[in-house]
Image (cartoon, rainbow, N blue to C red; front, side, top):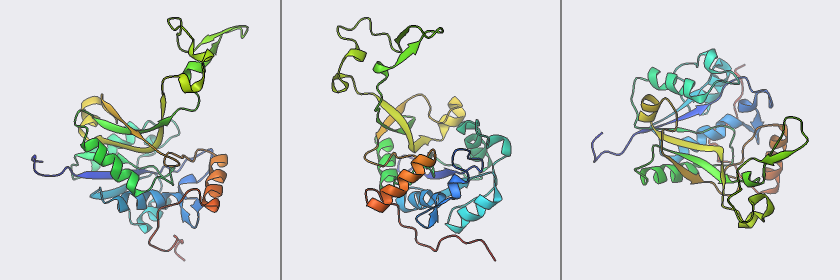
Length: 254
């Protein structure tokens, strides 16, 4: 890549088969289409990527991914698809297996159905405008401030603040939320990084991470059945919307 050529990006949509809290979550229908379809459409409609690749360990999920226009050039090894497998394992494997080399990659997870393509494009533009950053990660204002968190003693009879606040005139745990320093927690709406960070640091984020502030339901994540039910209510009320899917719902052959 020369200075005149724009960086080339690839989108990865992880979709392992072993979800425990919401069985079959990635391919469970939400408003006619499987959750996976909205992530694929989000990445494709953003216009930011040369390819949209789904990483899965299951041929059944791969078939659905292809139906919705994604590529699945190979399956993920099962040892990289357990409930405790870190993302860096399947990510390293995938980048090594691809014939082409990319400057940037994004992780566009199926579990954030309300994110939409404009969010992905906004994130990519932000990272490109932040040359000192290795990556960008979605965050949102923490509702539970760590300054108000406590660690009980082993016997459970006493407790102490999670964060040392002895130097403060007024301890955070004694103050109003609005008076506390803003703290953000990561969500899974979007991650974008330069591919070099994977080989150079052995991580998916590198050493310098830029914050991508999500708004409204952009960071909404489906983790359990309660989240799923809430997603359905948000759609029914019109409070949230899904990216348009330009094809018929997936139907197994025969």
